[in-house]
Length: 86
Image (tube, rainbow, N blue to C red; front, side, top):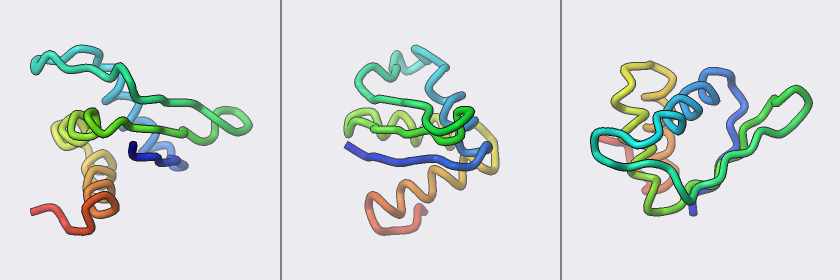
């Protein structure tokens, strides 16, 4: 499991958009991971991404053509595997 807490509006929006796509053209969807808004006025998004759904999140973030989404994907790769994406 990959836990993360998102605090910026751009990151929260990127993950929300990726998750809300439901089943995509690869016939994949988030079914086991957990997403919970926390804090006053839904200020933080707490995520627990299951290992088998982490690749799905990364793919959707990088396909989005959105700067903050791509940056978040790079940060996840660096934290999870300790290397910069190629």
